[in-house]
Image (spheres, rainbow, N blue to C red):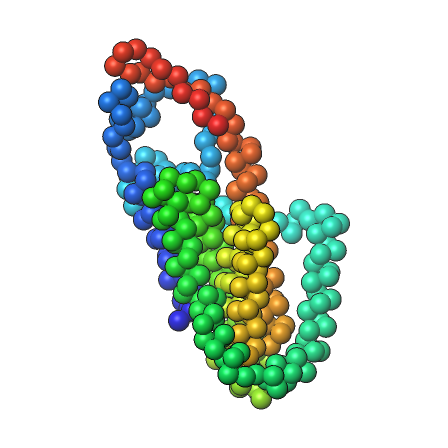
Length: 308
């Protein structure tokens, strides 16, 4: 089951642990290189020439700490920095950002007035087909989103595909951050689910027994979809990703678990979080992933390596 406010720490540890364990396999303490070069751990002592900081997204072993522990510490540091940047981002909003926030508020307010008629319309059109669709896809907003993200990360490492690896890595971080936001808001706002309130809008602030708003499934599904869409080329994969997330959102209304405003807010949290994570890591790579030259001693002399 998806953790609620009392399960925030397990949620965080799942994301950190999955990423750290996978990255530790790739960044062990001393991986053997071809016979013409020194081992990676010895080459670290060689000074770099005309270098800049490496890609922050590849930092997984701070202070030279090896193995899973080092990777875990690196991911924790990355999560803390990204979370701080996320919550301070509104301080740097421009006019366009303010207009988008106002637009979100206007749509959300409208949906609150339309929640009951939308809910009733969905229930009138509910059928065995919609129930089957829900049964087949609802888990994509729960545990399968985590499985899929972990599979992307592991697959990228196994196939040595940095793009695939970073898609999974960003997706896991987006799931953790968006999930924490949703799980904190749920008991604070304390909205009754449709089946609890007979389709009416009822809030009980600071009551952990009522956790309809926002939808955790929609948050998770759209967080994953936004990361995949941002990192995929073309329009087919992004379209499929968002269509799947939209289906999960409809499932929650169909199953009397959420209102339209619940899934809309969850979707907004997921999309904003996922897009922020991907854009932030792109900006950091643009700033620090520039060319550097590294001199390496080899058995027959000295070689130079360029890194972009």
